[in-house]
Length: 213
Ligand code: FES
Ligand code: FES
Image (cartoon, rainbow, N blue to C red):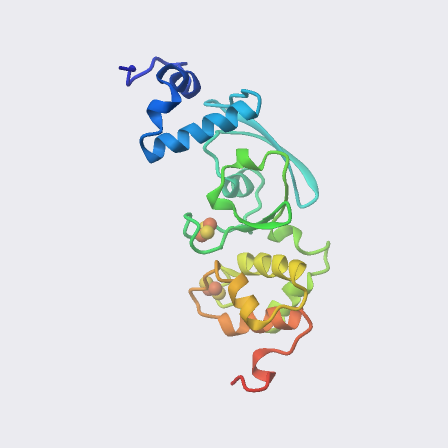
């Protein structure tokens, strides 16, 4: 019977080795542990934590380095270590899209991943969407269509819209709704948001489209 309270310094990996992987995969958490162990071994047995760890990545085209607790989320690192508070933490559980960032070209919820998993990544936050003082066409379109009320959800929507248009330059309304489906606007400005996305992609807003009231 393994000691349920391993002594300090007794790592999860050595604990897992002691009890054997087969004994731990009888529960879902055991399966997750086994996968984590396999990933550690594939990564060359590199153990990080439990103390502060060094992270380096690129944010908005600039190199960034920090030492953080391993439990730090990417959203926390961006906001509290780098002062990039445009990335909003609203639900903190992957349900609202307020923390949307572009991670290696893909949309990601920064509240749902540990910063350790962003090691070496290229990240763009809302602060990096504009080119200097020139707003991105998506930002200009959101302004033109007044696609916000309180504005709290807006950075996430703009980032998600930018990712969509990078992928699909002229999306249909259905594609826009689907792509922005992970973002929630509690003020209900969806019509204006969809219009902003349509216009940013060079298409007529909903009200001007035949058959749409
Ligand atoms: S704050 Fe990350 S999804 Fe809501
Ligand atoms: S503008 Fe208020 S939550 Fe979207």
